[in-house]
Image (cartoon, rainbow, N blue to C red):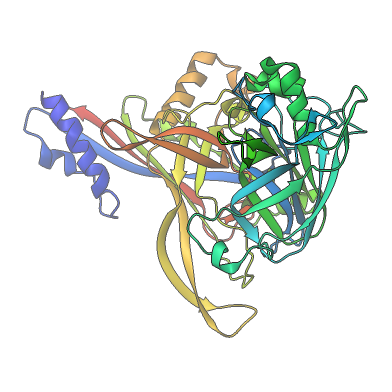
Length: 501
């Protein structure tokens, strides 16, 4: 019981050690004459550098569509995305006799619309953009990994003689009345009309794409019983590509394809009928990111700091001083290892600065890709997620302006990565004398911007349910780098051990 009690006291001491006072004799004041709890603290330098993220796993519930200019670099970032639609109903359409829309006695659709609803956006909502929606020749498969540099054109996924629809748009749709646009339940969207004559891969022509979908249903309703059947036999999906324009990027979270037709109601009167197919997490949505590679390389080579930039731009690599932390403390308990990454203050006045990431993932470098491919969650042993700290406010004059502006000092503090330090040390010890030669990244971690989904636990708290690469435009310039003049990154540790007086 005494050991358990003293272990609890260590946790209290961990909080006290945020001050600069010595902790050499704290243990003696907490224990009796039989035991002596010795607590020591130390701090070690952590080295860091920027590394280029050539691509990231593009498996996200959000699609990113647009082209924006990074004010920090002047480089352009483009997001194009592929959407598939889900069908889970073998009764997707009403019985043929009730459909009044007909040509030469055959049922037809009056129109077919794809709506791309966006929950948020980056940039100027009045920027004029132009996109092209291409019909896919075959679906992306669920059992494959698609990264953000995957090119559907180069890999033969675009149907050469299929649908090709151009659309000029602004994210602030001026065709929508202001009174509607400001309501709480209004969902802004980009509308794509698929109403031109359509010829399928068998050479059969329909008056529009909706009629094709409707006729496929009446030929074989089983094609509509699940998403696999639908994307393989009816509609493989669409690739939406930015063709022109700069200044805005939409975060598309919901996609719908709606087929409209006229039907008879119970009284024999005509009314509008519709069948909808959703783009949801049950089917793939992948974003292709195109970055200015020369600008990315230039930033990665800047050793006065380190960078984190998304989408798919730059990560920060840390080399943890595992040997220094463990040496001469083999018989001690490593209670805490605290590491804080500090954002360098940015005095830029741009209205369209990239946001700071909300969450950062710390992951061993050799697990950078498999973590996401396996849908892993942070285990607080080898992987950690940290939400942005918002610590203090400083003021100063902008370099570009004499006016005084307020700025925030932000950081990301990983409060205790002692499990990771111990894991790295133990793995190295078990690996033998040549372990570090075979595993040169053994003590390296990568800091990655991520998005996090949470669920409510039975106790009323929250738990992380999913971690994905952040594909939104974010930017972070951190204190660090081999030529850093802003102070070193340190990892602060607390050891404890029991010994006789």
